[in-house]
Length: 435
Image (cartoon, rainbow, N blue to C red; front, side, top):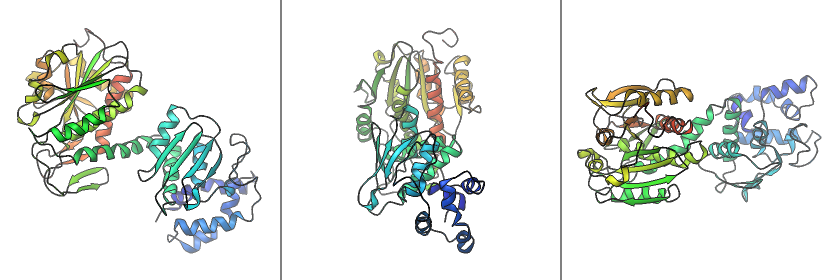
C-alpha cells in the first residue's frame, strides 16, 4: 500500500490543493479532494489505486470544468484536472508543474497507448527527465510535441508509476539521479548475464561491440583480442576509457541475479561485476558524453585476460595508444576511490592528475571521492607506457568470491564523476599540471 502523500501524487493531487480550495483560490484539484477526506479516514491504509480512481471519478461529476482533457493555458490558468483521463491525470499534473506544458492527453482507455500533446518542443533537459522518469515496464516515444507511452495489456496502472516518478523529481530534483541509476541498472544486469571468463571473452566482446556501433566512429579488435575504438568530438585531449572484458571464472549457468535495494548479488557463484560494472559504466558514459561540453577524442579499450596478469593491456596495439594524453580505468572495488598507485610503490600518474578527479567530484556534489593507493590493474600497465592513469571505483565488493556484490547506484556515481571530468574539460592536452 502507498502512503497518503504518494497515493495522492500518483493521481495528480497533493494535500496543499485542499488548503488552496478552502482559502477560495478556485483550485480544481482541491475541489476534487474535498469529497475524499472522510473516505480516507474510514478506509485507513487499505486504499488501492483502483478504489481511489472510482472515488475521484464520482467526485469529478459534481465539478464544472472547461472540457475533457484540454487546457486553456497551463501557465496562467488552473489545470482542469477533473477532466483528465484517470490513469494519466497524475502524469499531466506533474509534467506541467515541472514546466513541460501540455494541452491535451489520453490514457489509452486500456486499448491503446497513452498520448500526451505538448505546447512546445521539449528541450534536452526535459527529454532527459522524461526518459529517466518512465518506468522500465513502459515504452516512451517522443516525436516533436507528441509523446506516446505504450503499456502492456491491462497495464494502465503503470502510468501511475510514471506519475509518481515525476512527482518525486518535482518535489526533490536530486531524485532524478536515482531514476537514471535505475535505468542504468538494466544495462549493468545485461552485462552481468553474458559469460566470458579469461581467454573466452568473445561472446561478451561481440555484445559490447554491437553496442558501440552507435556510440563510436570506429571499432576494431587488435591481435591480442582487445576491443578498441574511438569517437572524435572536436579539438582537445585524447582520453582513454578502459575496463576489462573477462571475469575471474565463468558465471554459473542458470544463476539468478538477486536485487536488494540497490545491491545486486548472484544466487550462485561469482556475480561478475569485476569488471562488468566498469564495462557498463563506460558504455553509459559514451551514451551521455555528446550532451556534455567535452571537446577532444575518446578512445576505448575493453581488454582481455586482465584477471590472469593484465595480458590484454600488456599486448595492446601500441599505435592505438601513442597519442593518448590520459587514461581512466574503471576497475576498483568499493566506491569513491581514485587509485593513483600500486601500494604507494608504483605511481600511475603525477599527484595533480588524481586531484582532478577529486575536483570533479566536488563539482557534482560528491566531495568524498579521494585519491588512494590500490592494487595491480590495467591502469598500472598504461602508466608503464607513459600515460597518466587512474583506476576508479566501480561499485563492487568481495570480487572473486561467491559473496561478490555490486551497488549499481555507486557504479552510476562513477559515471557521473567521469562525466564531470569531461564536461568541465579538466584534462588538457600536454598540460604541465599533470604530464
